[in-house]
Image (cartoon, rainbow, N blue to C red):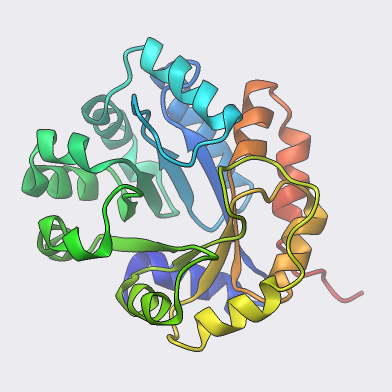
Length: 260
């Protein structure tokens, strides 16, 4: 079993739900990456998704898009992020999930990237612009280093496509909760519960909800019918504002309440 999948299952086996915050590497400078990651780790997250800024992102809402622009202005690159993470990899106790695009990986060199990513503490990878049919470009190198390739499943996926994606996804399944871009939302479609049941019916790999989740109530609501959540825009916004209380409340909503 992969370290990433094991971390998610470990959270759910204790009655809690997995909580994965998304952060943008280099937003505010790469020197902030270590203290932010170690703080999130201390607060009890399941894993941490590390966004790599890219000049032409897909699906990013305004909050994450602006964070990526700030990171790029600071000179952040995939290679620099890997080097920074490697500098404190021995202090990590949770797996990291990198979210990057295919071109930076190809420019880096697939095999070298996989080896360096493993040394940096990366145990999962999300490549939003790479179709499942092209995954053979990176999958052998990732498998060699035991890095899970996570697939995204959208609301518009056909049943046949959904089955293929879920069976191919490693670590966890990233179930997109909205049609559109990332960003905080106030409500979600009522049929989501059935949608998540359908996804889970194809596989025993845990299903996590992502996109638009921004309140403790959202975390609890999705936790009632899936294995956990990924929270992006609200985390990025809160880190910029140094609002750790909001982040603690979000993480706390994923934890089981002790019986008194």
